[in-house]
Length: 319
Image (cartoon, rainbow, N blue to C red; front, side, top):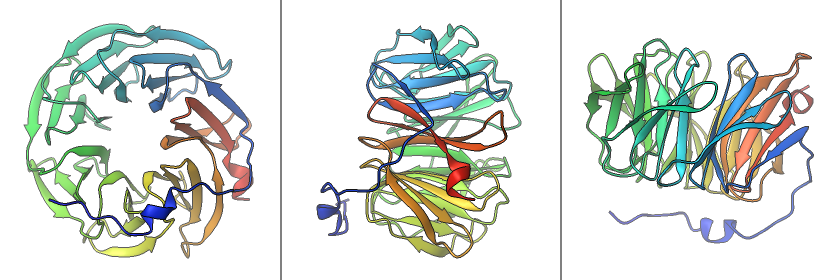
């Protein structure tokens, strides 16, 4: 199928100036792009996945690297913590899924099953299961205790970029190339809802904390807001840049977007007004997450192609 991109994208990659912003702090690596990161639920450490075939573990309080693992056969595209946060699963360019003990990054297992790269990994919120996906169009299900495959979900026509659980863990969203966005009913083992509207590949998806909205980010320069029960589009946001990632704030009042040129955008959920935009990274924003600091302020963490993980004072933007 021929890919169709809006005409404005031909011009949207040209450089332009946005107001400078200063992060609270920044962690810098020498391992290339940061494709993914995971934060310890207790707030003591975080793990990064790197372009240059490695994982690194950092202390959150000290900002110092504590451990590193270099035994991959390709870039590490995705990681996830199991629900007990005592294991991390990683996948990437060598098509395998790795399991490591935490702390220490001690390798427990290396499992094969995919026929190509592993683009994303997610842990089931309530069960000892991990789901992986990539260009081979398959979603593999792994036992998080034995690290062995237990099931395969088939039904996609295009490579899968992102998996994300709904607030109801019986449902799993999958965002894929060539405009494919679906919801899996895991009890029935089949796709039960499709979302139609994007005109290019979809790189991320996130459901509102109370389940009222679903947001999807696409290379077509839009973020679309959906009714997750019906699949109907309810709002269109048009940053006019290739969109890479999307994330709701914990209270659901704000939606944060990250694009391929490295900009961050903040929209209010009520009225869908954009309240902030700035250049955050020199290159794509690959991952975002929220962290509550010891003084009760909400921080936004963003990682990018510039090899930096930045901590932003999100509370200051939304007062």
